[in-house]
Length: 452
Image (cartoon, rainbow, N blue to C red):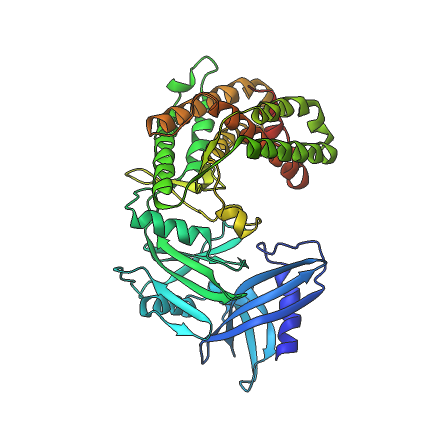
């Protein structure tokens, strides 16, 4: 069974959108753990698979379903056929798509189940309705989310890093502090990797009646582009500025709550100078890879030089780390922040490290620029709409910063120097990303060096 399963997984994993090593040969694959959650037909098995590609080793999590007969509704997630222990030939498939098996995850969290190295937990003083059936969301890349009815959303972390995931740590911490800007946590699943408790999944309230910030922003941009040329942005249908202001206020409140719930610190001028030097090196590497950035390098370089000249310490704390319009939801009451896990590709220690809250502010400012220019990428009237894009972005950036200040966020004096450097460093990262993945979008981050 084991040898055959290795072969099936090696072929199947590379086709999954959450697989991090696309385009590279799998040199070795091993099954680090195999835990039976539910026996019978169908059966449910939890797997942790270790994949080595050159000098990179990545662990992945998989829920494997086992059936003697595979329904048509599960054909699209078939991994293959395998002789399974003494049970004979079985179909092996991705059980995240099988609601009859994923019910076991709800039941496990509700009961505080322990099976093998797996531990299922529920948040104290919460009840979990185990009658809800799951449906897989299709929008995510690095994780898989299951929505149970209209009550819960379970995020299954596909790539695993030993240690507690920052999202579990921060969401439970903020919820305990009474924050209104996180979706209520209900439970989580964990195991031990390399001797450390390691988060496998986290379940929160599903915001069924909420709208995501990216979609709302794009709707506003479309309305503006469809309006008469002489109509100011504030008069066009779907103006987003009031929501940008509220989002800024909510962001400041989350930063304050994070500072109250977790350790804080400061970085000294010498550390800031080292940060500036690091940003400079990243800029040089980006210019070498994307020559089009070269003509704008002086703009970024000047911002990084000004950062190096800061002569005072800067407060740091826990932050979101990957903040943009796609990470926020507008409920009927207020904005809610999602996905506190940070950049999934970064080491866990970096994602948990203290940082300036202005990094989150910079990320959101870049997101406003992306929203404004995203629709211009293939637009036949892109050139004539350039001014409207600038207008929309400037208006909503200003509203967000005003709301952030109103909520108690700090953006004054030399803070602008740090914010500018962080924003341009984000744009440098975006230039490389777009060059590699979406070349037609390259003008979006390049505009960051000329528009203000």
